[in-house]
Length: 273
Image 1 (cartoon, rainbow, N blue to C red):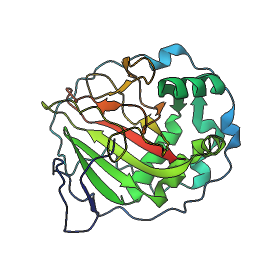
Image 2: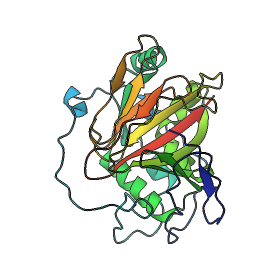
Image 3: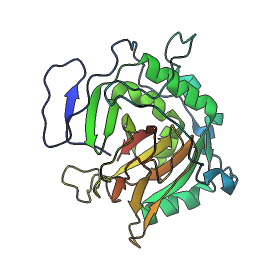
Image 4: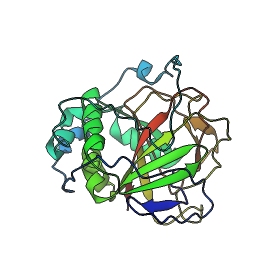
């Protein structure tokens, strides 16, 4: 979810509008940029059915050790990374698998405001890791509740490749990509909100995809949603690679506090109409 505190990477000046001021510039050793155009990925729009057990809440791991809010990053510095992946690699038709019939998933999305969409492959997640290890962030936000958002603007469009054709059919276009890290905390859950400047339902319609970079559980900071029609509160625990779509300008949501011992990481991919 978008925060109220922002500064440009490399700038010494920051403006605090009430958010928790904790984030610092990301590592300076990241390099390179990507073209923002995206190849045709129409083959991704087939209807594939996954085993329901994929979405079962993963077990809590035993992890020890501290994490530095300002310096910790989710990716591993693997050897042999020569540069960021190409848009062709990220748009591979086998990289995303739908959770069921696409029309039914769309119906649920627009009725409830949120739906469990599918999953990305481990190969795609490794490409994402390479991208983040070699591409500098455009900005950093502190979201409070020990949450940090590292954002990409134009160069992040390549990460939206698996869903661009689908979004074009829904008359939406790429807006931004960001990585949201929830660190272990004794603090409170986030407040309920929409991703709009005034926290009110907006006529500017936005659909956001959440890709789980780590396993997500209620206990490590899953996002909670209020369904639009029923107002029921629901969350979607799942393993690394799970993808949830929600109408972020209409659906109230909040990040739960991470009560475990390791950071929880999501990739946000937002599309505007």
